[in-house]
Length: 436
Image 1: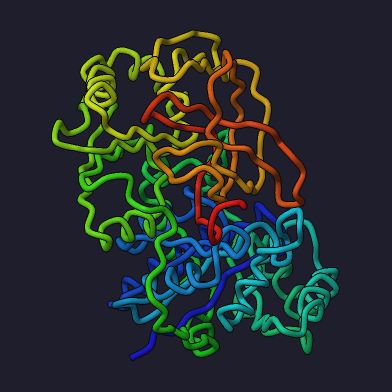
Image 2: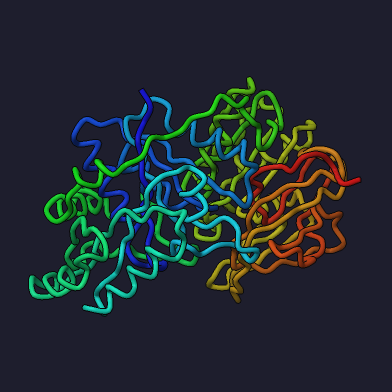
């Protein structure tokens, strides 16, 4: 039986959609529903809140960085074994890349799923009607099924809002303002679920259950259309036995990537650098995903078994690949936010500093500069970059030549040293074929 689903979006970032999405997931799970989830766009943190709520991996659907077949394969994996699927949008409903592609509205249209709009009403009353009418009518191909009014102040406030929205949109309910539901932020967004208040999702679920017509929302859900396309492989496994760093310093790993590697016959061998564990000695590839190594730089620098294991893997000819946080650790030095410099693995001639943070953010189109762990020179990839680090690189051969979503040239990026390669880019999917 096909799963049903809907997408939780918002008028803007910060409206509370991650906590409301996680609360809805937890409520359905409490009812015995097998509920799965996805996040629109390139995001590792929000999906972690979903997974904490459901106990199931959350997936990502990204229509700028993914080929349509890859996106269809992701929604198929997401819906397998699920009764219900809840997606969470990115930013506001119509916000997209520089090229205008990849908004939550685009994903809703692509998947033919209705949207529930979360609105932070803490600073408005009757004006909410104009906001909702604008979002409802902006794109006729997107079904805005109704709204959840978040951060309401009082019964009087709720009555004013409800009266203003009569005949404008279905109000599925409200969530009252409660400081306990404020999630802390750090420099890359919300704190990760495993670093947050463990009881927050349950508290949010209780508030949502009290104020929102969850059954009415479920009744408006659409069927998840699943195709029989052959499964795409966004990034080919870099080896047969892949040692993957997995802990609070290295947690930015898409569920779909790990699943496609396993489906392709690769074995994933998890290890924790923070626990001073080396990559498995039988691995033929090592993958260091992104995360927050800058928050644990001193502990990583002291983890000599881990660092020696990385160097030993490179010495015996393993592919060693890192993204963002992994790039920082594969270099020579990492300077943390307090200005303390820590020695890292030294496998790439790169030093990175977080002491004077400057934001680097956006979609990236990357052309592989030379043959290496990711494939042949000229192969084209799509992905994302989001970090605050600066770097120095003394004439290292680059991994990529990059451009942004509008095609603006960003120059060389990353570094390669034999079979060791890394960059600040998070690779999401390939394009068809190499550059001619």
